[in-house]
Length: 417
Image (cartoon, rainbow, N blue to C red; front, side, top):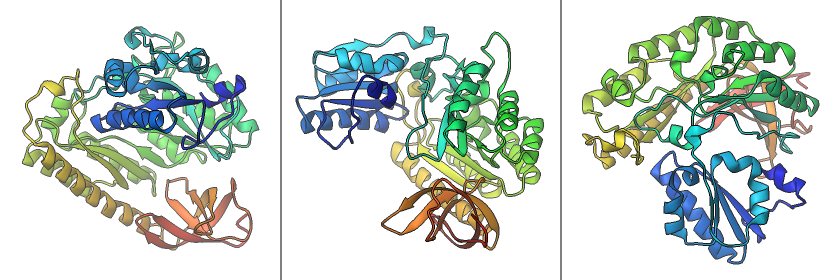
């Protein structure tokens, strides 16, 4: 979207600066995210009352009327399928209320959001290969905000990758809303595993990292291939949501706690040192004390490297929003805090396995305040290191010397650059 504005002759400003036009990309995954989106629009209106304000994204897609009621008239709202045209819409906007939101459920092709060049000052780029979701988990608003699963054709994926490769990008995150569904909607059927095999073979000097993937979409062949492929990052983010089979069923999640646990152990045994992250939702309407205890037990004993924990947030229009709550909101927040603390313990234990080892690090940025370079290992360990040489956008060999909740510290090995 930024590049689309630049092609029309616009200069990009920081959002805290005075500008002629502000674009807000909204979120609605939780009620707090939706509120913060509206709050940002109100803040921008106060900050520069004469500026045009354009909002897009998932909160706009699902609840445009609430935004207008909350922030008032005179803004332009564009649904997710309008993102490729957002710059033209914004330039045409005359300051009156405009709503451009179509039925996302009827969209059957992925929108064109092609990057003509990688974002500046980036060592890592994102490769969007899929959009939408067909799962309809009972708590989730995403299918209503993003529509059905749509995939980018392999030739378009390769066209985007060629630009990244020519620009010197060293790591690419393969991403989507439900990335494991990749290819199932295309006329010539393919799948995520096949695409990753092609990418890693065609671009051997680029590391590929996979975004969040569902547990039922990771085959044993995929895991064994990942273990043998040098430029596929040993890092999986696999949502759990709950360790209780009863809650998983009520969530419309199609796996059991035992399946999830066995999968993680197989990954850890097949790919030593693999980083495995997960998501957990606490306080789902049917969650009892026993259900929560089962979740804690699973996390405690599974080879999990870090945890993202969130209290349940009712989203209007979902099945779960109509369920009677057995767990009050206050208790859900308390449980989320407990899981976060457990996740911190798991993360520190994972970092501890790195102490004294020598690891490859892709250096992403220099922080003047600390005087340190920052980067990540292939297995997603955040590393800080000191150097007199400019290391940005370089892969270096680092010996890990200490750990903290924020990451690990290391020193450059001899001849590391």
